[in-house]
Image: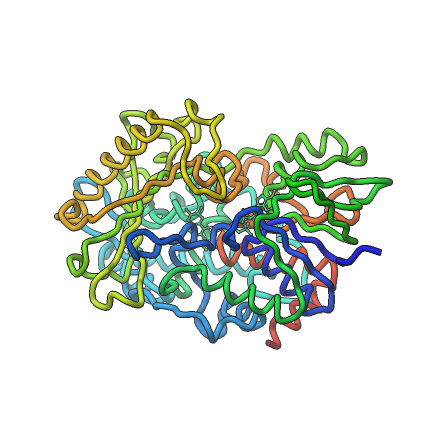
Length: 504
Ligand SMILES: Cc1cc2nc3c(=O)[nH]c(=O)nc-3n(C[C@H](O)[C@H](O)[C@H](O)COP(=O)(O)OP(=O)(O)OC[C@H]3O[C@@H](n4cnc5c(N)ncnc54)[C@H](O)[C@@H]3O)c2cc1C
């Protein structure tokens, strides 16, 4: 008899939330994480006492009564989170080269229309129509509203509509079109591919409400981990799963890097489905199924400069910036070499120790994975957490970081004078530390041309092997939470689980 009802591979948000749900329902759960730090993209790191997020810069839907707030009540973490509500009248500011105006995305739908109508006075009706339709689209996805007793899977309407075309249908004003889609690095928006529902579900959650995690998103991991352990769940770090072994149609055990075998009744993979296929030893999975997963394209990657600011030099700002060099927000990810960077985002973490001033700043720009071709066969050494890709890689990082800082300084006047030091992450950093395939920011890229192809079911061809995490439904804190509900719904019943969440 195996000791575990469920063995979860990966301690990202999806793995931890699934562990919580199943522990609460009485399952004996083990979570295995390859890194020292738990949480995947929830992790933080510290440089010169400043805290940086790996992958959670702000979160939506956390006001009382909103979907993530209710889910986090169920996970017993909502009242313990340290949050900073962002600027009501402009939590995101969108700007363009050659145009001094910063266009505001405001919290609350009426306010969203109000603030943008000030900047686009002729477009009030178009803005009203935009928010009405965004709300309608979101309503079509019952799981995102935590609604039970409805179609348990994601709806099919709206899946094959292109986001860029939809926004263009709202208004002929090209600047406003670009402003409405200006936070699209949140979902790696690609004008030729991104479906409307992806745009709608993401912008909706932030328009509802926008918060930063004070001192970073790792608090979500810490609280979930504590709750899982309190219910008897086990979590092991430095436990890289290298084999998932199937015999007679079911997975019998997994194998760790050091050869240790761990048996279980069920296995949930919180890692990329293609990576899962790569470590699965099975005769049951057909080539066509694993090839489909292996060939899915991943979302664009990013190059990130995390800047430690000199103490008391830069006043904290309670909003993010999305800046584009051209009046086109949909193609920035394709710019490489001398044309890079075509766009960037600035996030300013909120720290509990610095009060009026900010400790740090993160500047993020898309970067194609292939820009790092030269070093793709090198791997960062874990757990030493040191890059070992040679001098040419270090030169590349410095060259690109300096170019990105030059661009950011056009917006943040005097930026260079307030920089104490900086650290760089590339697509290879995300690939090696988080296991992000091709360094992709948000896992599998969604494509409106063939939307069903990019939907991953929580169940697989092997009855006791499941998926969870950002590749299932959507990425982001909300998308992954909905994914965990779907995965665990297979175990305990989706409506039963939704009822419990709604009653929490
Ligand atoms: C730069 C960046 C910025 C982002 N900003 C935001 C934001 O502001 N707001 C927001 O809501 N979302 C944001 N996201 C998205 C969000 O962080 C992710 O969608 C989410 O955290 C992914 O969770 P996950 O459950 O899929 O697991 P992941 O975070 O992908 O974690 C997977 C875990 O599995 C582990 N693992 C991998 N292989 C193995 C193995 N073989 N054995 C054991 N363990 C293994 C990894 O080490 C990792 O811990 C951002 C993402 C990135 C990259």
